[in-house]
Amino acid sequence: MKKVHLLLTAVLAVPFLSFAADSAHSDHNAANDASSSQQAYRKGMDAMHTEMMEGITSSDPDVAFAKGMIAHHRGAIDMAKTELQYGKDPELRKLAEEIIKAQQPEIDQMEAWLKKQDKP
Image 1: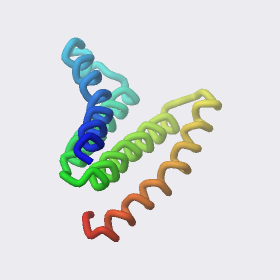
Image 2: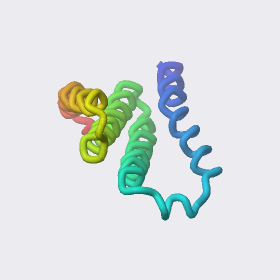
Image 3: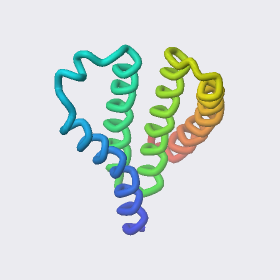
């Protein structure tokens, strides 16, 4: 079980670390000049990564998985909503709608599992 928890932590941390590295090398003034869609994407990513990292700190690997994935799915939904708000491409807009439809029921399922385990 310890290996599973360590693996899950590593898998969920990789995107966060690469995003942080990219952010560290970017021009700090660029964030101030970012378009509305870029700002929305950044805000969603920041929230997702914070919630994911908090979620995977549970000593119970099942709880860590559920909480980390809930945050990850919420981030996907936030990005999809940003695409629907700002995006123009019909194919990507359709994909964004499908992401929302697919991921929300999975969030609901994991939240119900956490509640059943008394680990909300």
